[in-house]
Image 1 (cartoon, rainbow, N blue to C red):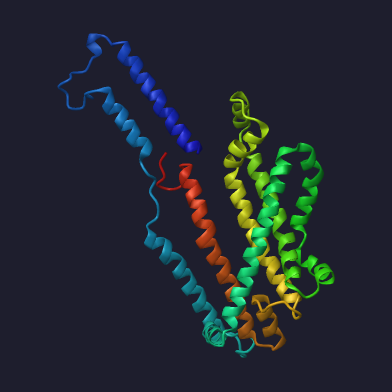
Image 2 (image 1 turned 30 degrees about the horizontal axis):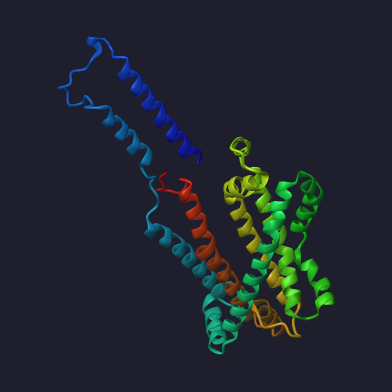
Length: 322
């Protein structure tokens, strides 16, 4: 946004100077020959040139480069991993290579365990994150609207954010038993503080002039919060949502690894724990790769498009115009 504002301001100043010069004609000796091809025909041409300069899109990396670079890096890492498994480890059961892991993942997919684990964990993660979003957003609004509440509850929220979510698993098992409520409680306690703090960080970056402008225009505190502060705080809020999802996904894996049995379904954490119990390192690595793949997919398919769209609307994305 600052870049766009600067360009618009520069354009306005240039136009004012052009208009001033037009209203105060220069001496005859200083007037250029109209027959000169470099002489502008009118003020409109100058204004059009300034507009083109302002609206020129920034150059960005070609789409092919954005795809080939990560794929090349991944291929290089997999090659190093396979070479280390072939020549650096005498036992394939302790250090399986990507080929062995791929074969094990294919077996897990064939018998349906991998698909069941991914679906169960993803369903829990999404539902838990949405629940944390429904609680964290109103709480963030409330704390941002009241300085007294923020001073009283802000340190507690920050403390809960740094508290490892795995610490809630024993208490949740005692309270709720081996049920899905245990998993959702751990996810909720891991994600909600991050969403609240992300919202508050976004509110802190809103310039105070926006609030004063709302006051001058007669907006109430509620209108200022919903129509001025909240839209201006969206970048920080989105960053808090991304961090909240990361915390919820980690919390979910910790809960699924520890809380096994009862009525709790079979998730990726359960698959990881099963591989450890059976000393099957290929199953363990397959579960780790599946957890990583789901995290990357959510980032690329959900949060990255939202972030690009938000930045483009504010003129901050490459190639965006206002």
